[in-house]
Image (cartoon, rainbow, N blue to C red):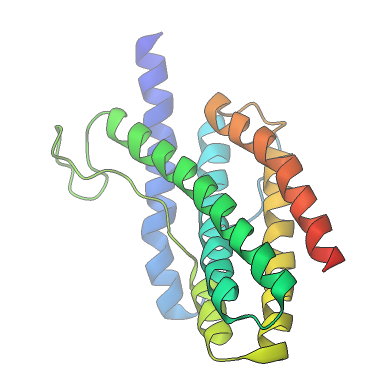
Length: 201
């Protein structure tokens, strides 16, 4: 049973490492690197988990970074207050997801997916901090001020939060990974409340 557990986790992180290593190449060729939606039940638990992390973590990081920018740059007091709270919330979510990847990535077989090195000194797995399209959106946001800034920020947050809502809702029903499933179940109602608050601004 232990061997099966280690094997399943090894498959998970091999899949995640493959996805992450492919991202820079896709960015250079201009291919859309947005991860595809979580597929149907025909996918394995490791594939579902890898796709979830590779989608949710960049989204949380992007929302947090854009919201930190908005809390300082927006001329609208309601948006500044909203953005400050959202930045704190999504930084916490991103930290939870990154901790899952870092802790579990080191446990699999203690073999680095990049160098093949075995042992405690092997590099830990890491999930993408942000997708190229999200980094581009941040640069675009940093170049505008006033009402234009607020409009782009609200639009970007609606899209990113909507993606998180779908990710959490879908993953919460997969049973693929209890730890990540708990994060999805916990965060789904918060994201839905945040979307409602954003609509009310």
